[in-house]
Length: 104
Image 1 (cartoon, helix red, strand yellow):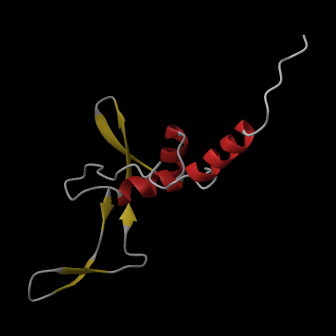
Image 2 (cartoon, one colour; image 1 turned 180 degrees about the horizontal axis):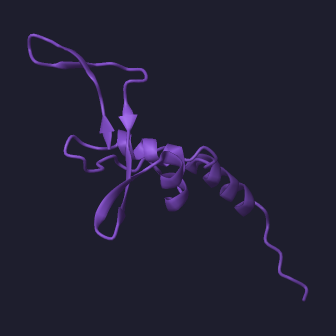
Image 3 (cartoon, one colour; image 1 turned 45 degrees about the horizontal axis):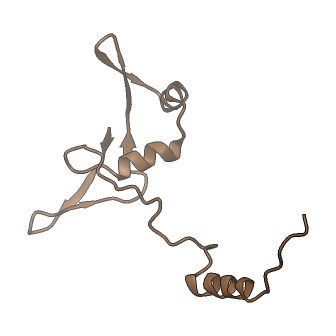
């Protein structure tokens, strides 16, 4: 759970949140059907997750609290992939050699 402190509101009703050290995160684990507040270290060690995983989950939430961030893996082209022109040039070069029947 994350709570932010509202510093001020515009005439339009938009809220201005502070950026540094005003966000507090509370951690809860379910124990026999009831939520129990726990410290950050206990939460991370119990679930075997890192702080980065927690921050990613918090940043990816929608206003309703549902995680809506899309998976960004595989969106970028491979950096070590040889383009089709070069691959075809290599194939053509290999095909340019004379074929010799094996002696065995």
